Image 1: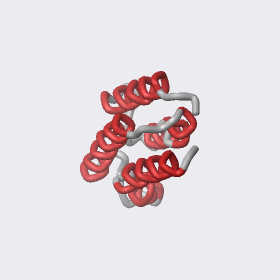
Image 2: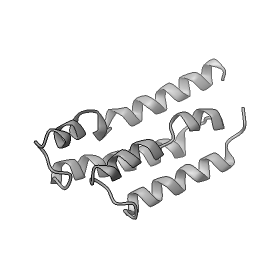
Image 3: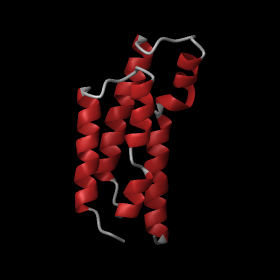
Image 4: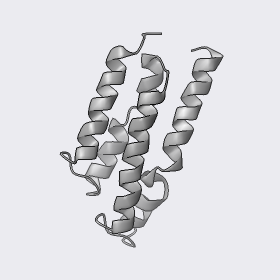
Length: 108
């Protein structure tokens, strides 16, 4: 990946991380201080799903770059913690968006 590709990847990662509920809020769920169904957590998670999807749609990355921001591992954690359901519209939409960008991304 060239320097501009690296910069695009770093911008995408930075954008996604700014609203990532895994960083601070899921720790509160693990500690029992917050329930997976908490309204505040739901709002942050919904916002994060939208930002993630928008970032995928606007990022100009290769397949390798998109693999580095694959939402599947983070979605799995949110689903396992009971914050999201597998069939949640945001989850379904984000997965479909990821599949689309991977299908059209260049190999390198």
